[in-house]
Length: 336
Image (cartoon, rainbow, N blue to C red; front, side, top):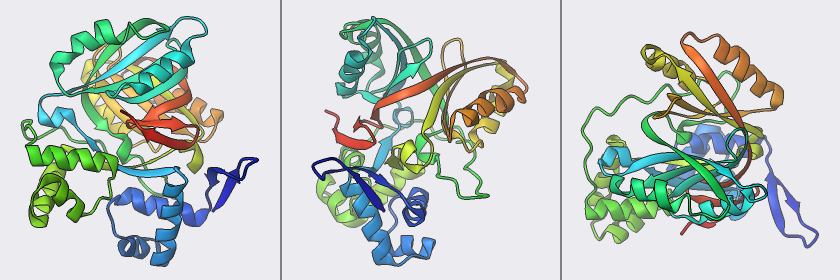
């Protein structure tokens, strides 16, 4: 792995080789796997796997984190805010949005909206205040359109750096169990894993003030009921996908499930959600170049029955991903 450095010799962004990519793909498949398990999965020496991944983490190019799903706990909601800004105020508004603790994703766009932000609210009762007061009062914001996430079909944590011939994961099934609120120990475990998705059971037990076997049982329960999932957060451009777009897809209601199942299997799909608003699907795609994006939004969408309209917005810059403030291709400090 080579490092791009500044004039002062400080590392900026890593340049990944095939060994790095193999390690990353194995880590994506099992973010909490041991170094030994990752070595066995890749055929690369355990020490080499550990060294490569730790180097990426030390360079702030990689982080393993957990994501809590408010839909599985029955209290919170996820909002997508499409924001138009006053002329010359886009960057200012994006930085302010990224500072909000509730924002998980903040990107600037080339499209009808200037910004798109995803917010996770712990309590649905907070939504009116956020939509009508908090977001419109941000300096530079001119107009806000809020859409409620109603169902996940594919989460960003399910996206994979595709090896040749590899098939992506299928669509996420609907929740089979009613939402269940988190207990106090579960909340502590989730909060710690959102900072460090590879935290040991000993660390989790200490945080939750329970025994290690209890921490293991609680963690398993959280994952099984899909209240918690793990992901490897890395800037797409570093792994060969420098072009990304968010696409609002308007679909005939009777065709939504079949079309979502098809799009969830598309290797370009970073995430796919059913939302409120005029467009039923929010589709976030990662592409190798602009011609690849053109193929996605013309041929791939065009061959699907039930699509009524689509609106493509190209991501210009990510200010925040999965609750982590970005600094170019580097991960910045944790959000407040």
